[in-house]
Length: 102
Image 1 (tube, rainbow, N blue to C red):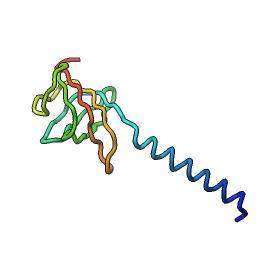
Image 2: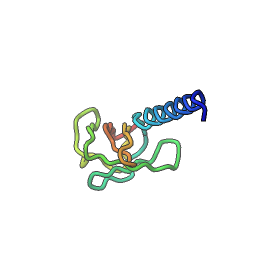
Image 3: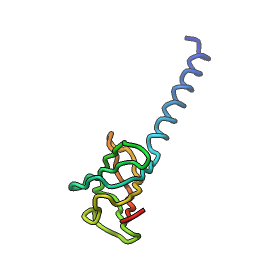
């Protein structure tokens, strides 16, 4: 392969790799109703769809009605907004904001 083509190829591969890492590290936000809380796992039914998301909430900052709370305070039917990121192929919640009504 001529050096110029090899250089262009490496540049393209580097840009693709950099872009993938950037998007993978981005935080995601999900809003919906609490369907279930078991141990440190939260299941949320997404607003506007039938999709369910499962989050590890063991290290999350949890607030209910604006006050700090524990995972035990989350009840089925509460409206939540979860800010999370992918870690080792699973959604890990960083912040859970819950309210009893929407």
